[in-house]
Image 1: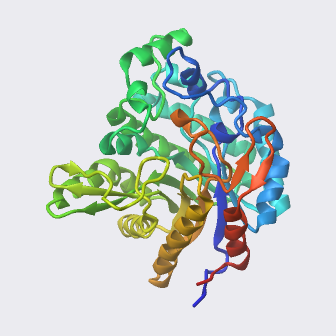
Image 2 (image 1 turned 60 degrees about the vertical axis):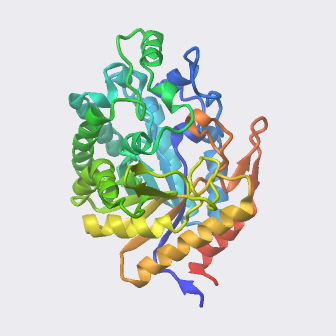
Image 3 (image 1 turned 30 degrees about the vertical axis):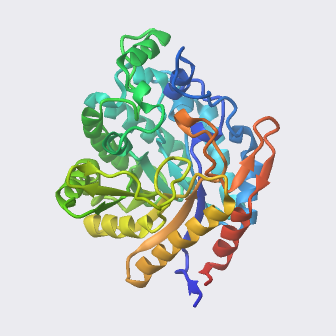
Length: 411
């Protein structure tokens, strides 16, 4: 039978500033992309030019049937030099928020989606505990300017993803990013003695800085104008134990997820971001299972993982859940529809069991810049011509938009 989602359920699409705006020249990632010998297969460049095209893009998102748009504001634009805040950049993001409201979209704002100002990375970035105060100051200033228009807020995007990547084995290009000589080259490029950019940094000290930064940011945002829920988003895989792998599974959860889930108990919601599962054997992480297809990112096509992570996150934290990211990198749009259909069945099962799932955001709205892998992986509901910036809807965009408009998942 068709299933109707709760009234007020957020149906959204997601994007991140550096991956879609273009020209983010004051960010740490821009530096890393342009260092000689960079492992980035290509620079971000103009990305999807969303910085200039956002009015049409927001109208397009709404026309498809979605009622929410999750995007990030860019710290490197708002505070391009230490202590120097750009009112022009803040006004730009205020216009974006106003455009969302004019179109009937609830804006879900992420304050930090991987990228930081280059000056912050030159100070040791997230590896230095005291640097959490810089992030809190930025959140305070941004909220003072924007808070009355925000619908929901995420302080940090996937602060645990570096630990996850380290545990599961590096994605292509990440080995070089963790290389000490590459880090020194980035430091020289900005005239500094150090350059620590997330997620390519030492993860143990970064974890503690992120935990402190989140709590400080939560309080700073709550003290500002507006009244909206604030939470944290985490990169969650569905940890599964093969025979004899229970201890390895539990150890992975304890190292990667649980410190962040613990602090999320004090938040308004937990943002779940899931793409696949991780299988654990007695000797550690297992490779993809024979017969299970893999995506462009190299992990298993396993949409059922989302149901598992929603249940895990809610049981651990006791907080409502927003699926702030879920999607697939593929050239085959029929596979995208199949993936999302099965993932949404998992959301349905959670809701039927009484779990407080408040929304679902597909990642991503556009085929965008996928960090070290450049523009090859295709996560988007909307294709973007790399030369003309022409947007082309994929069948999955209209299919998911119809579900959002009807608030119903048909058989």
